[in-house]
Length: 94
Image (cartoon, rainbow, N blue to C red):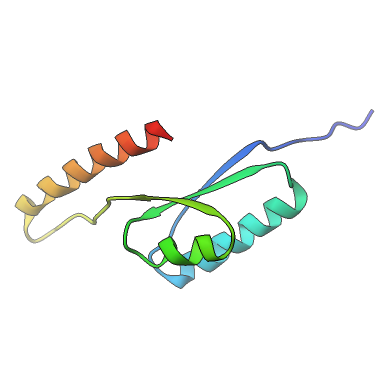
């Protein structure tokens, strides 16, 4: 007997530049073609390119308040911790 695999939910993260977004969209398209019943959700950074490109391609996206670590001004990383906690809260609500 042949066993069939199903995928119910997929989360894809990556973005900021077209070099990450467009390959991720291609992967999502391939998953959608093979598993049309799958729910595909993107997660990206608020205010970045993915927040317009992903919905334009027909996928849902959740924007998170993220920022990179500051190596020269360590005190600025307080905002990173705040955004990390906000992101955790936002993702758990989804």
